[in-house]
Amino acid sequence: MANSVSKPRTKPAEERRNELMVSAERLFLKKGLEQTTIEEITSGAGVAKGTFYLHFSSKADVLEALRARFVQGVLDGVVAAVDGRRQEDWRGRLAAWSRACAAGYLDAAGLHHLAFVAAPPATREGLSRNILIDHLSELITAGTGANAWEVDDPGFTAVFLFNALHGVVHQPGVAETSSDRAELLRAIEAHFLRSLGLPAVG
Image 1 (spheres, rainbow, N blue to C red):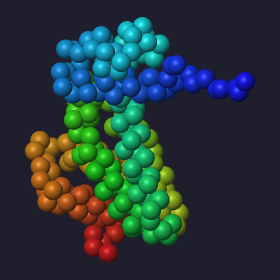
Image 2 (cartoon, helix red, strand yellow):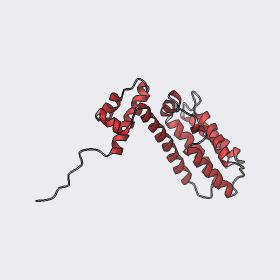
Image 3 (cartoon, helix red, strand yellow):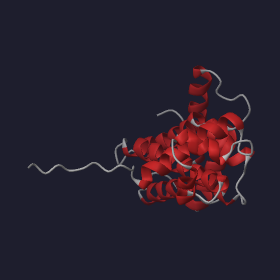
Image 4 (tube, rainbow, N blue to C red):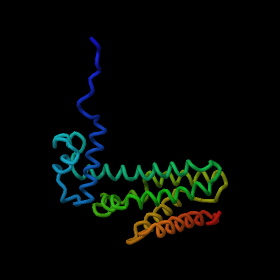
């Protein structure tokens, strides 16, 4: 008699959590946070209501998880773009950072608006410290150490540049066409480079 390995009947917890987040994001964007019920979220994820409470304590808890996933997703894109440049190409690495960060925000503008504007976090600390600012600060510090540019306070510069980018990409009606988007990304890159004393055109 052959031994057969039985497949688990339940999905891994992380997969269930992700399905709940995907369902919640879709519903929050369509109906709004307040109008969405937990029953709708669980129904959309194909799970029982009790499963929701194994992963989240409330809709606000799901929204906080969506915020964290959004920022991590933008960072993942930034890291990939920066790592795609040669280590010694500091200008290219800074340009890649600015473009990838702006593109990440533009690509998920609806989720960003929902998670940070329509239902803002309790504090605005994310605009002075977050994983994107930390990554940019590390890049600026490393470039300063390599004499690619002169910056007295990389942390301050990172906060300043991140908030400038953040403000520009969230203007109403920005980047409505592909040519508008391309021009916006070029302008953001140029401002990042000039802020560190580098020519906008390489």
